[in-house]
Image 1 (cartoon, rainbow, N blue to C red):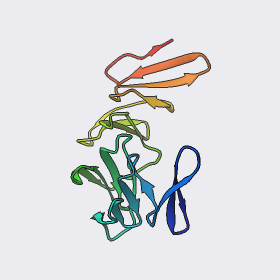
Image 2: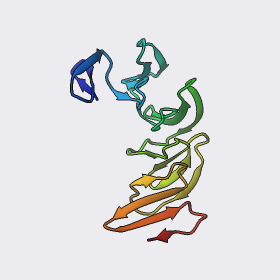
Image 3: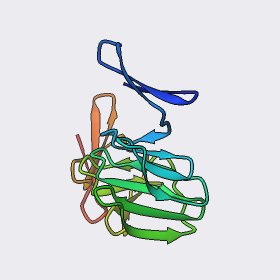
Length: 161
C-alpha cells in the first residue's frame, strides 16, 4: 500500500510493515512507475520528469498503466506511458473525474460517454452510472440487488438478467 504524507509517500507490505519511502507524492500509476505531481509527470525509479507543463496537471492512469489521461487546465490529452507519446489532445475538453477505464485500458468512460483511448473518438453514450466495464470496454455492468444489467455499446442491444 502506498500512503502519501506531508512530503513523502510511504510504502507498506500486505502485513502493514514499512518497506520503503519515496519523496514523491501525487497520483501514482497502478504499477507505481509514474506519478503525476503538480506540473509534471515523474518516473518514480529515478525521479526524472517525463512530461512537464507550465500549469498544474490533473490525471488518471489506465488499470494496466499503459495509458494516461492528462489535463493541464485547458487541454485534455492521452499518452502511451511506455514512450510518453501523445496520442491525441482536445482543447477546452475537461477531465471529468471519475474516469473509468476498461481493464485493458483501450476504452474509457467519462460523463457517461465511452471513448476510444488511442484516438479520443467518442464511441457512444451510456445512461446511468455503471460500476464496471468489461475487459474490452464494449459492455458495462451494474449490480442492483440480484439483478445485473448488462448494456452493450450503443450499436448493440441492452440485456438484463
